[in-house]
Length: 67
Image 1 (cartoon, one colour):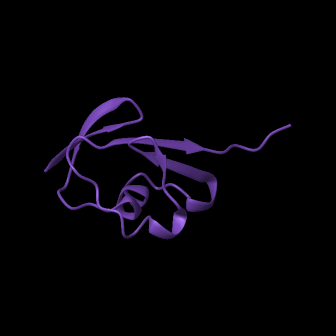
Image 2 (cartoon, rainbow, N blue to C red):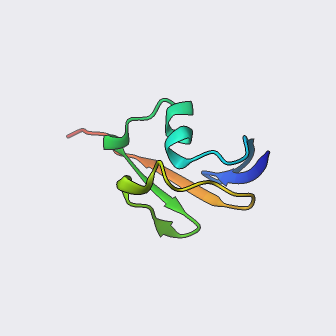
Image 3 (cartoon, rainbow, N blue to C red):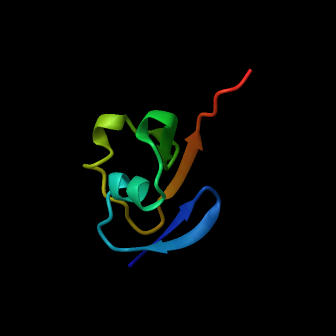
């Protein structure tokens, strides 16, 4: 298990979970989000390669259309 901070809330996830796995877990659309890990924006092409570790701080921002 790994302890992370997700959008300001402490949470526990499975060890060795990728960012792509996290997106699937929360049923998010990759095209509508941006992800920051430890203060750095993660490019979409690295979502499935980047593994989350204890003490990582993840911010997920969803884009919502409107007018």
